[in-house]
Length: 177
Image (cartoon, rainbow, N blue to C red; front, side, top):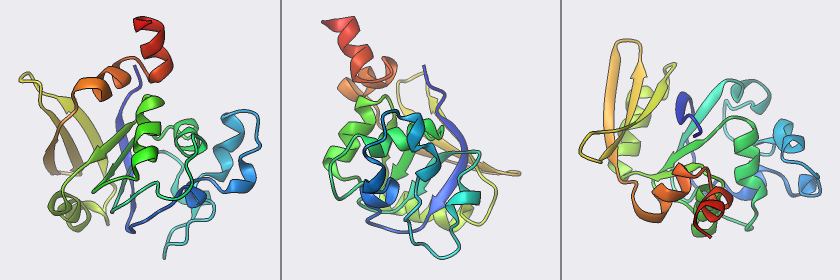
């Protein structure tokens, strides 16, 4: 199973669309790996440099409506080949969210209050994220920056949990059909 969690990339903007995640001019690439250097290449965000800010990051924390725009599997693929298996946002474009789970990636919806707190508390710090399932079946996102840590609860159940456990739709289908 993929290892979720790791160093966090904070993208303080709503409505980051699939063309910003992976520009359309790269959709003719024949492999997922070929998408790797172009992740977030067209994202315009003050202080963000995709060439230097993505390396080593494993989790994105952002605002609302992540993955809006054109429906394409290439956007989650570009995240995946860069080792980013988790995106945390207030909400996601519906098709993008499903494409994430179909690829065995986490698209975690969190409340605006929790996202605001994450940005206020951690965005200016070197932050690590841990995704943990507790004994009672609930899940939490734990953010850690030095001696500072906070946890935020989320739900992962049903079909989405099954997709994650099977590393996506293909693994799920192989096991169940």
